[in-house]
Length: 177
Image (tube, rainbow, N blue to C red):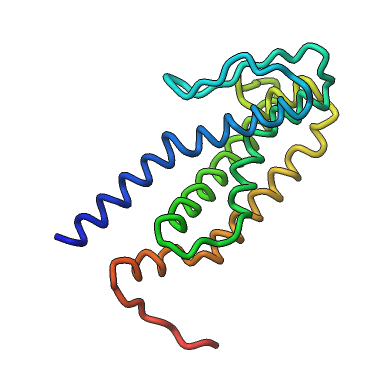
């Protein structure tokens, strides 16, 4: 019965992280970037769909691109914080890394679609490429670097081993070669 409670906790925290916490960080990233470049934030919304509306009057192309990138950058910046010891904070960090990796992949696909003339409406990288066309040369390498960083961090976290440990299941270790 105790393991069922732990499993329910994993599911509830996972859903909360995916539906509430990551979108909050994503939109907060856009908001912080907008404030840094001098844009006026008119609206910040999480429901029914997360969004931030900004008055970008007077903000140059580089500033607008930075606002678009803020949604990817803040969740990744939170991943760079010191490694938490407590299981639940570790688990939330793991989920943020996985969702950020998925977001980088979606952005890379959107960039490729943009290059082939089929832009994805309201996607951050599409917006960046619209206001800053010269970013097309850096877009895929930067997204690839983000993905490699996130994959490396995920690998260092040993997710399966830590979750098994949380459920008090011993993992079989292979001898080092």
